[in-house]
Length: 94
Image (cartoon, rainbow, N blue to C red):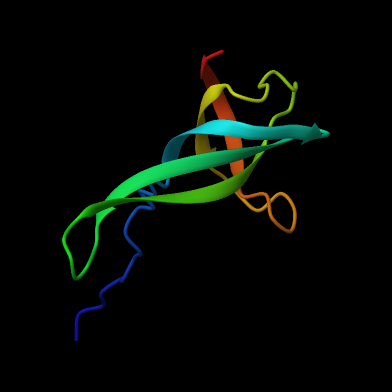
């Protein structure tokens, strides 16, 4: 029998696509952490009316540049603490 070498295909790992969200800072009282409120509009499953749903995300703000009321862009990252899984990318509006 012929000898075949089964080599693994070249590892072409592409970087994971990170989720991003745009929201408003509702708290900047913690050190290097901001709380961002993200609002989304979804149709009600039964009545089909558009309703607003909000979620709060804890995001890492290394230089404490975001202040309460700012519109910010956050991106998903590795777990940084018990609740922090997002990081601040940019402050879009003061």
